Image 1 (spheres, helix red, strand yellow):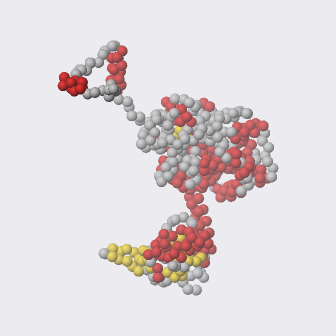
Image 2: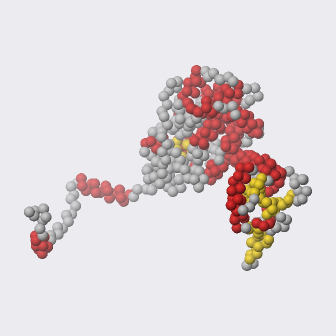
Image 3: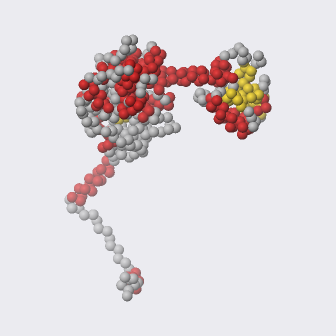
Length: 484
């Protein structure tokens, strides 16, 4: 069979070629192959290796089949400008899919050229799937390295197990728990119910804890440590051959995934994630790696990039403590002075709420914390997580505060936090070094007050009387109110 020559053009290159009649193109992008000796998947992979990285959408690319030896060298004024591809040297244009063809055909018709589906379209889907899988793995491994969590040696098996579990979730059954502290548990329990056909029966104490979590919409707090009874109950649901810690990792992953989705991929609750990692590491180190790598594959790449820019690292827990402290003595109480918060933050960094700054092209102000309800405008991404309430049967849980966007240029007083610099977001105004008040201004104010209290009167101003000529002129003017 005759040798083929082709190049994968980006959509913009193609539009320019059919619109102007020629484009500059490097010869190294042209691929030559024998159709009877090459797999379509390999041909597509080699074609796309030289094409611009514009994602895996077939609408972004057009295949141009070329005549042999078609490129003309361009040199002008002693400058080598590359090579030129003329429209007359193109045999035919092709799309890699039916949807792409429907879009490309409109432009082709307007330019008076023909376009059709390429026989290589069979290799496009496997290539696109391989690219997306590689991107997912890269994101998962990036989050593992960023948070210093060892990888899970059985991640491929655990990921397949997770996908099978997620397919059994009836989302209509758990919609009421979607934005509460019970969402992750609801996903695991519902998947168990659908897959086995038997709904798990919760003991009374576990049911009370679950009911309290359903009414708790303050999701900026540790997840696994918040529900010790549910944690033990769900671990006992593991079937033969399953790892109990994987069920807990699944619950945490679904909770954090929902947190990211709710905040439009602009925030990740790192303190709660750190706490869950510590809980899983105490049970099974592989489960912690499963959680982080699985979550990393679902986190947008822009969010991971923002974490890297901020230099976020996982705090090291104290020796002998398997999980982060969750007792009341280690929590920061609500409605306290900001000066009392700083020592607590230094002692327990994971208790700070960290909201990640989105990519520069899409600035999003972090959501306010509870301190804002008292009139404090928080412009950094570091706040203090509220105290985790104790689970009491029938306990009334307050509704969440309304979400209010806080302007970054707010002049409201800032709390004096001594948080790590790596988590700070506001670069314009340093809350650690507020502008000192001028001592001279204070002294002047005090002398003025003391002088008034001592009865010291200020010097009287000289009275300026109008001249006689001015008085005469004023006397001649008639008052409009006194005229008849």
